[in-house]
Length: 99
Image (cartoon, rainbow, N blue to C red):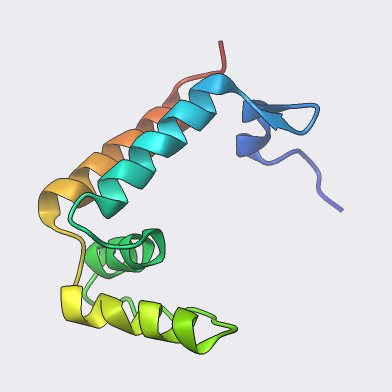
């Protein structure tokens, strides 16, 4: 049982995301996919860019999902500019209270 609610819960009311959260999520999605990656490849690329010691182990249920995940290896880590943008957007979400 949790002693307190998770920090991200403030971005939701009655199970619905705040408009600012949805807009920021769209910006993060755009940064992750700007170079033609799928969203899954962008997320895996972001993990790879965080540290050279990180080895993501993604799950998959279909051959297509496995192939998509493996496609990340051909693209490598998220480019530095995209990584910095995602980090900036995430930091802003953590720092700004819901208005």
